[in-house]
Image 1: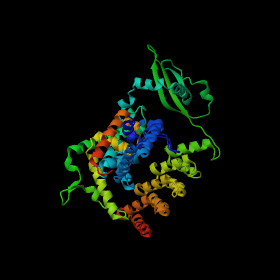
Image 2: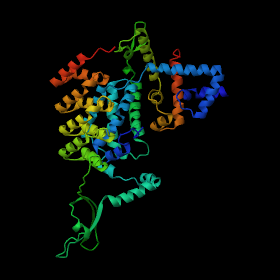
Image 3: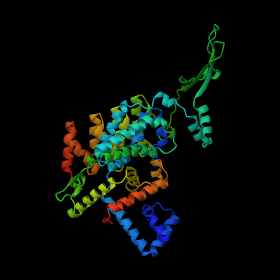
Image 4: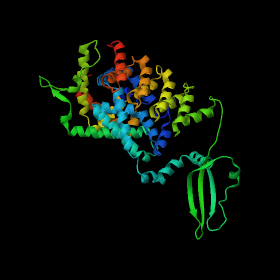
Length: 313
Length: 198
């Protein structure tokens, strides 16, 4: 019986799928039973031999080409239609919420605190009446703008309409560049601002603290996705001292070198990758550029760098 | 796996943003997993072109239906489900269209895997060992093709991709026990087919 149990579980043992107590029992048995020890060895050898068909990592070229192709397709792809997005499955929501009373409470609190819900009574038919603003808003020296309308309800049988809406206000803060709040705002601006000048200023300030992991993520994001080449160049400069030590930075520079639409960004990426040209991924990209690239400078420089590299056996 | 790397934006945040129509968030999500997806598709299909097609179809499908993602499983499991279904379709088509198998016959009438004949770019210290390894790789490839698509998928996810059986079960929408039994069957078939390779 024991040998039978062991034979049934040898495969799981080799794959490290057995619970600890079963694993211990199996090892104890195999130490005493020659037949089972032979079977275990045979299973291990068989599994080791399966590595003759290795799992290859996709080449940087294949990965970059796949990403580009996907990006092009995403330009024209549409997410699930409006109806799909608006369709609310109350049972699925309830299933989540019943296990998350804290989440439900948090949502309630955030809903109250996040926007400024204001109620207006608009008395359309009485002459001389004007919209009654809440008392405090007339004294608040800030500029308010409407970010969304929550509800519009007309009182039956009258001209009275009640509108609930959310408003955002412009605020200002100042502090040291090392201030946590300042950092948070800069990180937000680097990713989300519609004004490229603001994004550039934010990225420029962030490059003063590239050791911060969040800052490095923001710089990588800007290099990959920002629509403005000036912002992408700034991000590139901020990442320059991490090319040697951070593989993610190196890979992102390789992507920029292969795919960026701006020749200046590509050229600078190539210059920053020169110290690590012995890296096999960098070498593969250089080989591709040396053969195929439309940019004369990049093609020529890639050939020069490859010629300087020693042959690798 | 999801969201546990220092500095990496949490998948949940990215998914919620993507569901709001933020394409950049979706693209960041793609980058968290696309190398693993491409690796899986490449090993299963054996073809860069087919792997790229699987990659494209999987992420486009994910983009179009991300609004339906309800966080009942991790995004990792969800995207792997999409990829494995696409790969299963490919494997099933190949079983029907046997003429696509890259197999040729040598002078003695023995079949061999054409792909295993592609010379290794690295200078080998031992060419004979290198040749044996390629031949063995070819035999393993042919033995894997004899498995059913489902057996092949379970074996691939467990042996070559190193996933836990519980995860394999979740991805294939089945139980861990069923995944285990499928793995046993696949391994037995492979050991029969590769009998002398012990």
